[in-house]
Length: 224
Image (cartoon, rainbow, N blue to C red; front, top):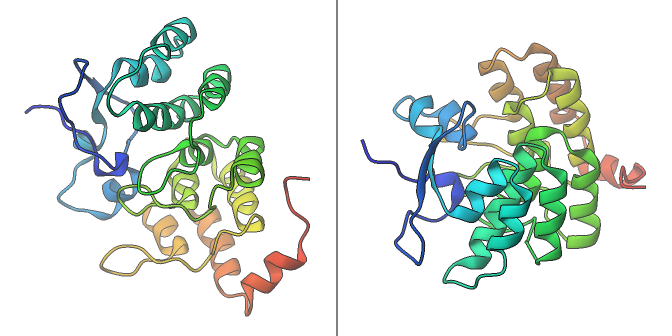
């Protein structure tokens, strides 16, 4: 079956000025859809068609990224933004900084972005910086409707570390009451489906607070 981009990326595979490269990942590129949909297998969610820039960013090839950033082509801004997601997702901090210097948008709407990648990997400092300095929305959605909190729940960290990242997002203004899918799942219900009991308990505590927005505003920012 031919490769295609996951909906989380926010744009389809398209012919432009480069030959995209089909790639498999050990982890899902589209975690929410893979978690919720019975007809969208983990296998499909782990494949993508990446541009040379995105491929280099995903593999930590700093010199290659630096070279490719010199070229202009149709869709370059989308590429840079997605490359930031992929760099953060694999914790290539130097490449992420390089992409930001080239005006990558860590809060790009309707696409997997740098904030999603940082939440997936637990880069709490970067999350704070994106919200504070780049006006990234802590509830920004990818192409499948996943928030950064979803990426933290379904990401690569253990549950304790994931909760610390989720707390950062909540304290920076993310809503604990967002719902997902046709069945209107809460964050706690998604954690339960993934058998993450510690996260389920912590998320239920936040979801049952009488005025979570007021509580957020009363706490000091985690960016300080």
